[in-house]
Amino acid sequence: MEVLLANPRGFCAGVDRAIEIVEVALQRFGPPVYVRHEIVHNRTVVEDLRAKGAIFIEDPTDAPPGALLIFSAHGVSPAVREAAASRELRVLDATCPLVTKVHVETLRMVNDGYDVVLVGHAGHVEVEGTMGHAPDRIHLVESVEDAERITVPDPTRLGCVTQTTLSVDDTKEIIATLARRFPDIRLPRKDDICYATQNRQNAVKELTERADVVLVVGAPESSNSNRLVELARKAGAAAHLVQTADDIDKRWIEDARCVGVTAGASAPEKLVQEVVARVHALDGSDGRTDSLPEVDEGVIFQLPSELR
Image (cartoon, one colour):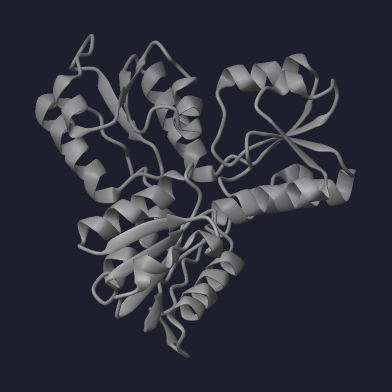
């Protein structure tokens, strides 16, 4: 059986930056360091940082006054920032710069007198953070059906932004529906779906040209990982989300000629390699591991000025 690795896969620049912010803060200021929400959606990463002294909380009021609080890569609402300020917490912001870009664009539209359609998934922490900037002016759309049904106060003053970790293909359909229904809608200046999400989705499409089974390493809470599973299935492959190698069911790969392996943007490479080793062990053969051509995404985000 062949195992074929996707490229690119795993950590993106925003995740690298967020994890580094927590690690550098722990080294410089010492534990404990409080983190609002999981810094990224990956159990292995979170447990590793917890062992080093990070304490993960959902409400800033759970941190003692004056403590150091880090906002996760997913971004936060103004209400969360105000809660942190009211506790006089020292704050480091690990929000992905691409999420910040969506927040800035949303506020620009709202300040210009527009209502905003946010294409995203209800309950996702990134969506909650974006909607928190103007909850009475932002309308969540999750599907083409939602886009067909939505009503807005003034169709001539309407803007649109998207969650950064969506399916590129599905989002195009939703935006096309909104553009048809609201010809004056102000669409995002640039594609809000981040470069890493798009690149990993493109790699899965390439993977399914050879692989009949695809394993996606990622967390159930990870939007971009779930989209990779959906994309592989749409392409005709049997696809499964696994958090660790232990999650692999031997029956998934029994009749496979080629097993593709990729990882969401929050999954470390060591988990990928453990999955590869487990697949070969379950297959009971020496097997061989190939890889799609390396891709240099060429993106690096700087640490906050307080840590540089």
